[in-house]
Every structure is written in structure tokens, then in C-alpha cells.
Length: 266
Image (tube, rainbow, N blue to C red):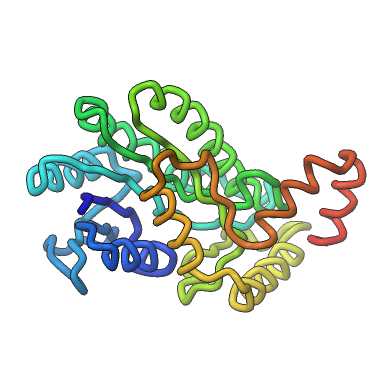
């Protein structure tokens, strides 16, 4: 039984990850941002956490260490997907996206890593996205956050391997969850040349997400593999789009791939 912390683990992908890990007999802690008294829910331990707050991160990790003495696995899942053209994205919206998706994950790693290094045991699993390998239109802030997370994880992995610790990413295609209305967000601007195109893309992404064959349990299964593997792979891609679009980007000439993207995401 391992002690596992899943950020943003009370709904959607995070809830599926927590449920599968709990079913494997692990001691699973999940977090949610809304303040409440730390407690239990469906066999899971629930902690308060705002990944954009260094004080909240420190408080959450210290509370878990007080209870368990160590953390075996950190799953950085907390995040959301902001849609907006670069021109219409206000600076606080852009920084809010990076602060949650990338800097929040980095804060969590900084908080748990010293104890893992001390024990020479631990795994860090960062939930990325196809948007961490391919930039989509109207999605620059999200892609920036996930590209950063991918590079950060690759560097971290190389640092940790000599110590017997591992970091990896799980990169899914769009996932059909019941929380798409909350996880897919739009910038607030309305009066600009991109607003209608962005709104149409968001409607499409929510529709395609609901119809996607990639389910939260598929992402959870990849996390379980990363937890139990003797040596986790650097990256686990989940779903057909996550498998094939990065390969097309690698294989096709740049101009041809760009044409493919413009056709796929007009």
C-alpha cells in the first residue's frame, strides 16, 4: 500500500485516478480548492489545496506528512483549459493559466521532493495533454503551460533517475468527463476579431470532448501503470489523437503539418 496524493482529485479525471488507485489498495489523498474541514469521502482522504498559493501547498503537504510520514507518489492533476486568442487574452488570465497548470505543479514537486530524495523513493506523475506537444489555435496559454510542464518533467526525470526516483507525464487526447463546463474556460473579452471564432471552437471542443472515446478511466489506467511499473516510461499517451498527432508533427514537413492543423482546427 503506497501513500499517493492526487491534486484536483474530487471530480473528472482526478476522481477516476483516485478511484482506481484506491481499488488497488493504496492510501489515496485527494485535494479540492474549496475550503472545508479536512476529512474523508468514499474511502479517500480529502485535503484543502490551492496550488496557486505557496502557503496552501506547504500546509497540504505538511498535513499529509504529519499523518503518514512520507509520500510515495504525487499525481499533479489540478488544472483547467483556457481558450482565447493571444490578442484577446488579458495578462492576468494568461498568468492564471500558467500559475495553475505549470507553476502549481512545480510548487507541489518542490514541496514533496525533499522527503522523497531523503528516502530514495518516490514517483511524480504529471498530467499533461496533447496540448503539451502540439499548439492549438485559440489555446496559446494552455499550450504554453503544458509545453512547460513537459520540458520540466523531462529535466526532472533526468535529475532523479540516478537516485532511484522517477518522473513522467500522462498525455491524453480530449477526455469525455462530466466536468467539461468547468474545465474548459474562455477569456472574458468579447469585442475583437477573434471572439466569434474562439467561441465556435470552444463549443466544438466541448461537444467533441463529450463524444470522445477517451474516458477518465483510460487516463487513470495509465497512471496506475506508471505507479506500478518497475521503471515508468517517460510519457504515457492516452487516446488516438494523443498517439497520432505528435507522430504526424514529427513525420510531416512543417508546412504540410501546419496545413493539416489549419484544416483540422479552422
